[in-house]
Image (tube, rainbow over all chains, first blue to last red; front, side, top):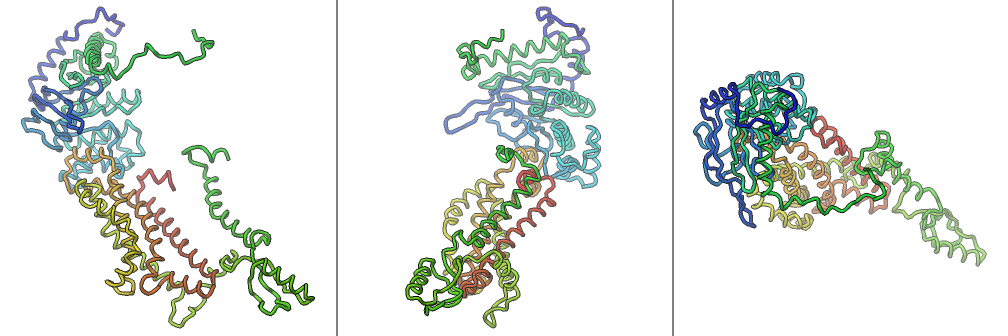
Length: 307
Length: 320
């Protein structure tokens, strides 16, 4: 199964094995946690207004892992910030368990791309922050914080300050800080974007591990297609200028996920489909500002031939 | 040597120590050369023996040219020429004289019976600074934080404060005396006026530099309005706020001398002007140096305290 598969013989990304199909049937029978309906966002600037998101609709079921991908400028960050309540949408509805989202709240946790641990608090106090803000006693919050740190294997660093942690550790703490509030949904805006490739790979495995252990729905923004396929149940593909839903792809790769699946036919088929969608989106969206290579002047000494 | 000129690179701790002491040693060395090497500057002659010249006295200083004329005149008339040695003007005492004054100024009783001792003068000045700075901070720090946090509040206050900070604080001296009398009231007022307006603007700017992502993270954790200020904004800016306060305290000191001249002259300013009047310039320098020593001493103490108070602060590593 893991041997090299030539592109021509790839199965369709729509083909699902019985196990995968059953899994999707079970997933869709669960309650809808998040419902986004005809969502639009217009940014008004003195120079005029731009339509960032246009008529976005999708549903996310409980314990589902959804990734949002799209070419740069497609508004995926804007979408997740609207879901978090950090930004207001222009029209349409965002419903979390039927209740409209208007402002940030503890029912939606968020992990940002940058490091947002509070530098003046120790790791433990960072995790306690949300609990204390929402009325837990200090003792209770501390017990829970230590439990969460145990889940990610960072109990040893409970009393350390964020600046003493590596980038990967910081993001792990940021994830449990958001989860400690027991949100209904976890929003992640390219959380591993600033990490190096190896750390990112380990973080993905960590995240899947956490997701398996607790009852949480995740909406994950990324521009890394492998990451999207590896992590998610379904992938929401957006196009750019304006951001519109191109397709909601059901990932045919079986669970539990492992890095060995990166070269499985289902994985490659999904990736091929994503590339197709994104490059098509990028082709009409960004052609003008990317430039071409045809007219590049040769900048080396001609005598210094490398070939 | 080469490593000194690497852009934005730290230097070794040995180099730090050496260069740090040099920054004090070098100016003192220049002062020593000017004071002790007779052919460097020394524009005057100090008369040790007037000889036959009746308008000269022992201890008098006069220009070299005039002294040479006097000598020549006496020689021409075959009289006893005056004697003396090259010296600097009286307003530039030698380092050892100032060093001695640093000690003797404290044990010399005041010239007038009810006049203050040096330590009393200094203490009085420190109290004026302290109250001026405390009153300014009680108002300036909260207003600054509010301006930095809420754009509307800033817009309401900052244009006027920007205008007011250009008005020189000493210009309010006469007004302050008319309202508050001649004692410490107007002096403290001058320091408050000199510090407060800058303080609001500086602290507002510091607050605005807080990473918005931290505020957003707190929002998504369910933090609401007032808690956002007390649990995120204030702790977030505290190390920088502390640094600002240190700089502003130095600022307050620069207003001290003008402030103390208003109404009745008091404190270290009174001490300095009195000694200058009697041409005790070594004591004047000693008193000025005391201000520097107290100022730098407080700042170093506060910097060390800051390191203990804010162990998470990374910017401290770069500067201190």
